[in-house]
Image (cartoon, rainbow, N blue to C red):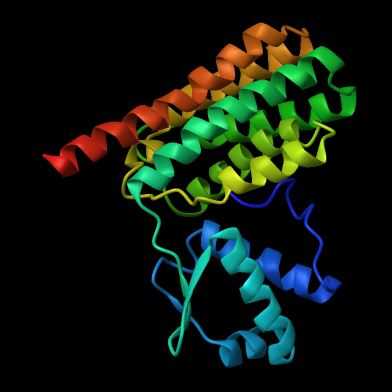
Length: 235
């Protein structure tokens, strides 16, 4: 899960170069390619992106401002360690924001081309989870990308800069895969896909109150799982 909408950012940066680096770093953190605790060295990042250390330094400052990395004097930048509490709160806030956002989209009406794109994505996601057992590797990565595109595709229709910034903030807490193992089970992923179809149908039918309820219910499943895992850890 990454920026909102996919590939773009609503926040101003000092240069387009810094913005591009910031988006790339954000994606690497949120997708787990830069795990929590990873040291971020300016020289290595400069070599990776083929730039000087100045835009790297500015991008890291922006990443710290977003809460994706932490900075310590004489130790530099490190990818932030997110807790189960962070994850739980992000899902709770997403339920409120996405539910309200989808209600706005339903009441305003969803463009036909957006509906076609979202339905095509749901069809591809459904094909990926037609089997039994766990979805692994590239198939799982594709399903998660399609899942992200569905949510972002709806939220991108909310024409509010303030809403966009708030949504970005709560969406920047990465999933912790070892906590959400249920999201690899094909049966569970099929259920999620069915919920996506009901959400989209309600949006298309302009059922604002219904879609708000469906979105909150959809995001309650992961939230309940995290709560149970927190209770287990405390026990």
